[in-house]
Amino acid sequence: MVREASSRCQGLLGLPLIRYDAIMDPLQFSNPPPAPLAERMRPETMDQVVGQPKLLGAGGPLRAVIEREAYRAFLFWGPPGTGKTTVGRILARRSKARFIQHSAALTGVKDVRQALESSQFRFRTEGVRDLLFLDEIHRFNKAQQDVLLSFLEEGSVIFVGATTENPSFALNAALLSRCQLFRFEPLEEEAIRTMVDRALVAPDGLGGRFTFEEGVMGALIGLSDGDGRRALTTVELAASIAGEGLIGLEALRRAVQRKGLRYDRAGDEHYDLISALHKSVRNSDPDAALYWLARILEGGEDPRFVARRLLRMASEDVGLADPRGLEQAAAASRTVEAVGLPECDLALAQATVYLACAPKSNALYAGLGEACRDVRERPTEEVPLHLRNAPTRMMKDLGYGEGYRYAHEFEGGVAPMECLPKGLAGRRYYRPTNRGFEERVAVRLEKLRAGIGTGDEDSAARSAESDRELT
Image (cartoon, helix red, strand yellow):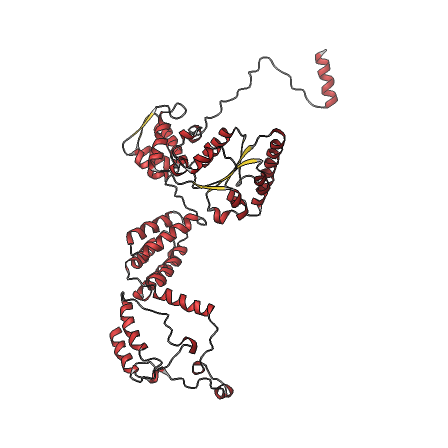
């Protein structure tokens, strides 16, 4: 009868039947792989968290907020692997809130809005709040961030936004005003050491099966770059390479291959490092300048950007104290265009060290700044008639060019003639220093200025004398 019913069903549906065979083996399901070591070792309480003493230590502002249970809206800003997600999870556990996690890099605004509306409904009907953890919040543009505002205003959800970018630039003002901002710093050496030691012996970690060869811990801390997740991931991979027992430097080297530097060509690291390079050159510290240059190049920065900044340093901070500084920077820039990386690295280093060791003067920078300020803030001055060109008879009749004195007709090539407008006569914008080549420029200029605009014919003789001193 069963066989006949099966045949009828097959005929009605037109599909072959799949019959159960009692001798078939049951379906086999493999055990899921264990979570990564960094996830298994994630702290579950405030006391287990290492690092961030300014925020989470005794009297720390974030710890105080958590202990007072003043849960509203937070922004966690800091580099990867510093505990932002961990603290968000602890917040959810302490507040007994359902933890909802989204990443702005993977989730659209529509999904975030649905999560917010669901949490809002739950808050209004059950009187409990969810915790929405939105990672990489800077990936939403400033218009997309507005979806959060009304929900944060109402307080129907505990919100934690995490970002590695400077919130001042990445987030809109309305969102910033509704959130408390906490800055997470890279983990210090002792925090990394504590975290790794704990992972080596914890039952959920490596269970005491591995120890470090001498020097491995120090190398690991250096390679981790303040990133706890990176440290634990490296330990896990080195342990798999070592097999059992002792983890040596060779296993660590194979696990890392190459240190992953924290560098974002459009973010804070980009601007912070180039600022450090510029200020080291300005302060005549070639060692620091070379270090920051290496950080920039190893981070993958476009060498043309570095060359442009060196050109600026040559004019802004060296100037006429050493005119060859600009030549060195320009030569480095041409080398970058000609050969690119990695061959251009030494040309950039040469220009960097030359500028760092050169005498410094910002007289050009200051002088141009003052002149621009006068242009912007003072009444527009007319060009003096004697400096105007007079290509037509009408212009000559109006006095254009009248009183002009041709410099090359005077000994020394300087005419006793004022070239500034009447309202600015005697104004001094360029004030050379007494450093490097500019010291000689200052001597010559002092003598020249003593005669220009006074009608003193003897200024020509002083100019000729100062020319000899300059050369």
